[in-house]
Structure formats: structure tokens, C-alpha cells
Image (tube, rainbow, N blue to C red; front, side, top):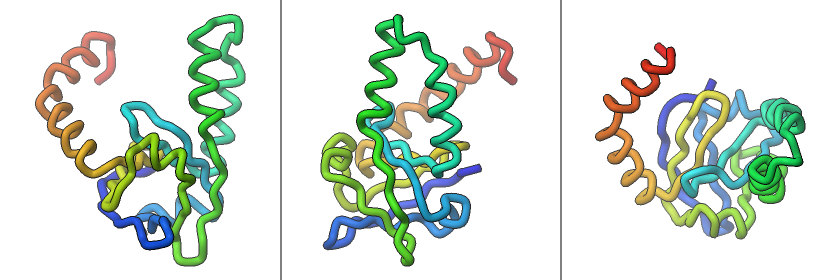
Length: 144
């Protein structure tokens, strides 16, 4: 399980070092794709395989299912983690996430989100101000 928040820089060769707390669980091959809220989602290979199987059950006759599948899969790329624990994120994904140094890695259970630091700070402030209301909504649907 991925938890925590870590700030890292993008080096001169456009590589990003993964947080040391995440390296072991990630392994040597990861998948990075467009995420929601204009961040990137980073998955261990095994988790991506499981998500892929779940998404294969979506009804392709539904426009929303087709659209979300396209969003997730067309943007996805397999990335090898180098011996120093760094990844090279393709330019099209860096542009999507507006990734400029520094970037924030946020552990979110089965995935890691990679954020533009300023965008993350703004998003975090918004969510923190709404936390009580979100908890109440989740409680009303039976999540404790």
C-alpha cells in the first residue's frame, strides 16, 4: 500500500527519482498514465494488470466506458525503473500533468499520483477544507 507525500526534482535529463519508501513495492517495471484531476497515475506492473482486467469488463456499448478506457489506456506507458530508482516520463505525460520541478508523489493506496507541486498544494487545500463534508457524504452511503 502506498501512503505519504514526497517532493522530488526533475533532473537535467528529465528523470524523476522515485521516493525510496515506494521503490521496493514498485519493482522494476511500472505503468504511468493520465490520471484524474490533471495528475499522473503510476502503478506497479501487477496492479496495472489487475486494473486492466477489471476495465476489460466495461460495456463498450456505453460511450462513457469507451471514453474512460481510451483516456486511461491510450495515455499509458510501461516504464523501466533504472538502477538508481529513477523513471523517465514521456513528454506528452509531463505536458498533461504540467510536471515541472519540483513534483509531488502522493501515495494513494494502490497507486501513486504524480503532481505539479503548485497544483497539488491548491488541490490539497481545497480537499482539506471540504474533508468534513466529504466524510459526511461517504458516511451517508455506508462507508465508515
